[in-house]
Length: 167
Image (cartoon, rainbow, N blue to C red; front, side, top):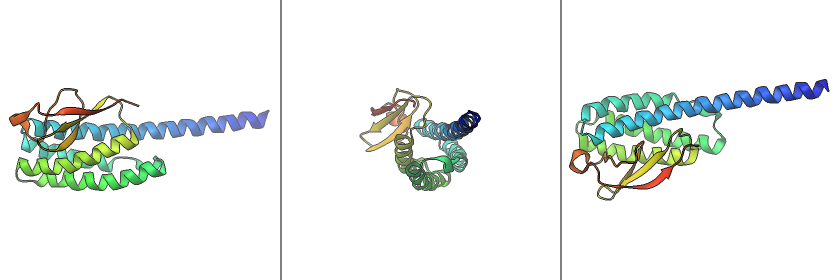
């Protein structure tokens, strides 16, 4: 009887610790997603300097992901995508014009889309939106199209290609 109670207590503690670790990881991923949205919103409203600053914030959020607790397949994918996200956010942060920023944002978005589809960390609905003119997709926190590839020229150009519900 005593051994059963002790075993149950150990299992409860281990489960709580795992749940806490997962929620800490989810929080960090959602902070990364918010930083990504900030970059997207800056590009969609033609704010090059804001996009530069927000890309620097995004870089810090990538480094803050406690990824070691992820299951092996998700961990491997995150390591791969994090390299792309960091490289493209770095390019975006130093780009001298908004066209170059938008080009970097394409690959950054592809990596973020692959990450969210595989890891499924979002705590709110995420919309994958696509611009046929740019032949590129992005993530949006809102259902309304806000095109980061053309900004004010074609702010609402695009469509929702996928809706990712919160887990």
